[in-house]
Each structure stands twice: as C-alpha cells, then as structure tokens.
Amino acid sequence: MKILWDFDGTLFDTYPAFTEAMYELLDGKAAKKDILTKLKVSFSHAAEYFELTDEQVMEYKRNQAAMKASEKPPFQGVKEVLDFAELNVIMTHKPRAEVDDILQHYGMRHYFKEIVAGDDGYKRKPDTAAYKYLHNLYGIDLVIGDRLLDILPAKQLGITTCLFQNSEVGADFYLENYKDFFQKSLVCVNSSIQ
Image 1 (cartoon, rainbow, N blue to C red):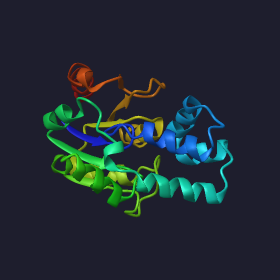
Image 2: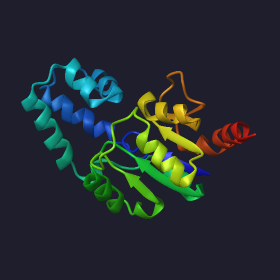
Image 3: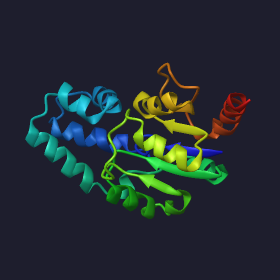
Image 4: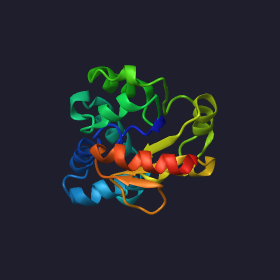
C-alpha cells in the first residue's frame, strides 16, 4: 500500500501545542475547545474567527516555529502503519525545515520517500497539483488526513481516503486511532481496487 500523509494532526499530535499557543495569544479569552475546533478547519479560519491582527498572526507563526519538536509527538501506533506501507509520502503546508526537524527528532525521516512541503511552491490544499505530482510518480493507494481539506484533492483524483480523528462526511473510512488501521484500511482499499 502506498500512502500519502498529511502532517499536523495526522502523523504528529501537534494541535495541543498549537491550541495552547493560540490560547496564550488570546490571553485566555477563548476556550481551548473552541480554539482547537477553529484551528482544525485551518489557521486562516481561526485567525479570521478570533479577529487576529496582522501582528498577532506573525507572533503566532513565530511562536509555532519556535516550538520544540518534543512538543509535537507522533501519534501512538503510527510507526506500525508506516512500517507496514510499501511507500509513504507527505504533503503538508508546514515549511520543510520544521518538517525535517520533527522527523529527525523522532528518528522518522527514513519512512518517507518524498515530502512536498509548504515552501515547495505548490498551491495550498484543496488544490490537486501536489497530489497529482505524488500520485503520478508513485501511484498512491490511500490518502490519510485529519481535515476534509486533506482528502478533497484525493477524492478528485479517485484515490481512497481516510479521515483521522474526524467524522465529517466525505471519507472512504475513518480512524480514531492507528491500532484499527489494519482492519479498516485493508477492507476499504481492497474493495476499491476490485
């Protein structure tokens, strides 16, 4: 199985740290649950919703970039899925230096054949260009993301999709944790190939 992964909230549990940073930026004037919900749509959505100034946006981005890799752990069980896959690639909006730093910190760089990062010149999701590039090169079987935004390009390209810790309508299957991956994904991917 050849898998295209999103990064934040899919491979790595980054949203608790992102939520805390936004909570501090807003001086505790918004509930963490609300912040997380808005960030899960997108950072730009959260910035608009919480009416961040340009200065606050820049401060948040600086704080996020300065976070230690140790604050962004991989999800439990994800390494077993990475080991199982024939090939893994990443498509993320995160800058390459941050991606590389986190992967190196956790000794996980070797899992990924290729990474398309936010500073590689591709349009942001849900544009299909980066997905097309990776699919044409590697023949992707499955796309895993934590937001609809992550799977929409795959749906347009006819690739099987999985939403992680997100039950919004639109994915081919859903996972709350990676221990269920083997049962759910093999059934779904095999049925879509036939």
